[in-house]
Length: 115
Length: 113
Image (cartoon, rainbow over the protein chains, first blue to last red):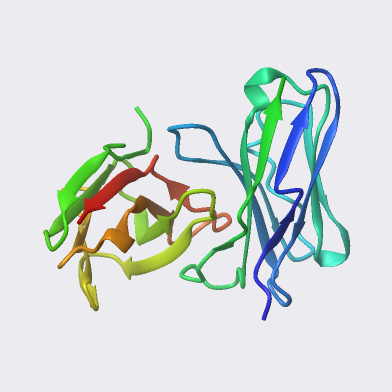
């Protein structure tokens, strides 16, 4: 079956513009995560969705960042008024979510460059 | 201090060498430990996971957890050029709250022929 799909794979935008990043998780996976990976840095947690529960937004770095998950499937991460420090690879992952050893399956990310 | 520390490398070894990759952590409540491999311009993929202390072996890979020292390791035997990638450790709590893995920054491994 298909893995986690992210689009676009690359995005170049001007400072101050808004961007939307999309994630299609693996069918049947109830948990969905967004992480950010900057050059030479580890994965920085952004937001977590589990089923119909309220999302865990504790990792969002500012109120310019928001995410939603429609119908328990596709998720969109929105960054408003982009800044140069937002340049990074944004990774989405999904998992079965109900077991603590349920592995995360990652997409190949969206490489965001803010000029 | 980050919760999970990992030397970014790069670590360069000749083909056939035994590779040792390590992470230390500060939160003694971590119980599940994972290793992910990430090739350039790809997402991380799960290599191994272990629960609590001990060793786990899978082919050329061995994961080791020492909870008393808050130290985990991944050993790669007979390393191959195809093992060249970034290796990220990750860990989660066992109880309370949501299941959100905390990742190290990754170690870049280069295996040269």
